[in-house]
Image 1 (cartoon, one colour):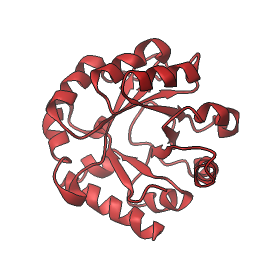
Image 2: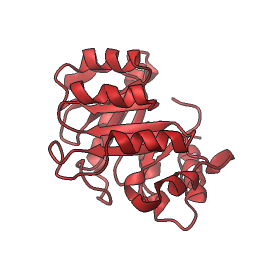
Image 3: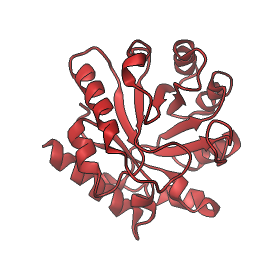
Image 4: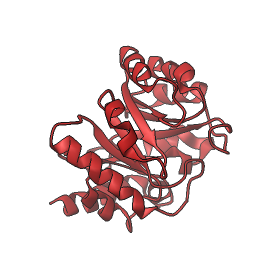
Length: 227
């Protein structure tokens, strides 16, 4: 398990008119500094919402040195994901439900300089994709239906986290276990207990008066559970 809980604020909950400032608010020093900035790319096809795309990500990459974690909720990631890796995203996550050849895609993402992430929706069983996950650096377990921020946490997905954690701890998988959806002060402890390494938090960070302090508080809560 990663030594220190990673916190990845989601700019889906930030003020889109001030994205540079919103990222700077979590790019301080010490515990108030986000480990990754989570960017949700939605195409209104794979999910029923439209957010932002590659031009905005390219601008954000110039505006911060915090690693950018791109979560692509899009159709045909085999074609479009590589552009985000080439732009300089630290981690590019695609959905197993959308990728045509996820193993080839993982290799191409790594060749383009990014970590490769695979995301699974709440109703997608992890067991069907364990071989594929051997080629990935990150597993993103969705704890809400992808598409909109502010949804309630689906506790049932923690079984998938436990499965992944067990496989990482026994050396069968080598990846960071990430969770996205409904993570806040009320849910982060059970997610940490199940074995999550990286916590995506939207409104829990950007709904707070001081986003940096919110990052530090969430990290401390997760670390306490993991002892």
